[in-house]
Image (cartoon, rainbow, N blue to C red; front, top):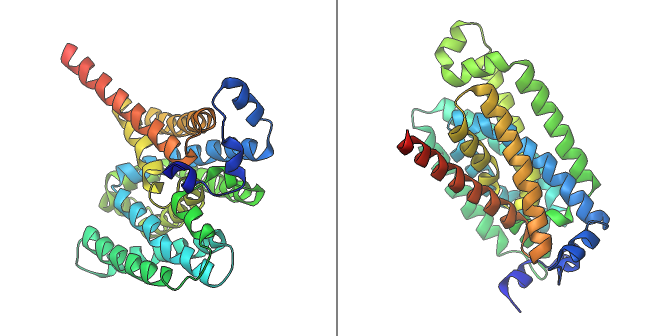
Length: 294
């Protein structure tokens, strides 16, 4: 048995075995779990592209990376308390993200130093708690490595609500968000509630990380936020187009990744990130060649 087959232990993932032709893929699309996976991929792709645009410009990629990896503690606590690990992710990542931002504001250390310290401590706690788990660890492994095919209706609703909240907050205050992204001091002088906006964004980002973990896993969740925005930044420096392209790349790569995983029996989360990575390499190469030709 291959490593890939060992990783995908969930009952829904078993339906993908042998799906190596377009006819099999079309048959897979008839299953409700596959339809939910595609809907979830689109929602998460849009959410990742939207928030990832500001994450990239505000240099918060390490912050989202820290929140994602520290979520291991929340997952393990869920397993130890015998509750759904996913239900522990939302409150844990929310509290963790706010606390980390507060610590960054209250210390003279650089944000990267604070994030490294907190991330290391959280991972150490998570690994120690993992050793306390007895018996079956399926729920834990599923969240660690992701399984977008296991998304249920509640996950879709949560993702949709976070997407709606993020869209309303960011787009209704877009000018102020852009000013805050460019220069916090100038934004403060202009009367922008900088702290309120910073903490509100961290709350949304932490919640987005929590819902995306089930799809792509803790190990790849940061790529889900950063790569589409980084790819779009290579294609346009106009903020409006950059934001639109980031959302488009996030959604499109998620759909292609799901189809690829179904057609060739590949892990769904890594397939999405792989498509995003290949698209980034292609765009990077194209921009370099165009620059040299000019």
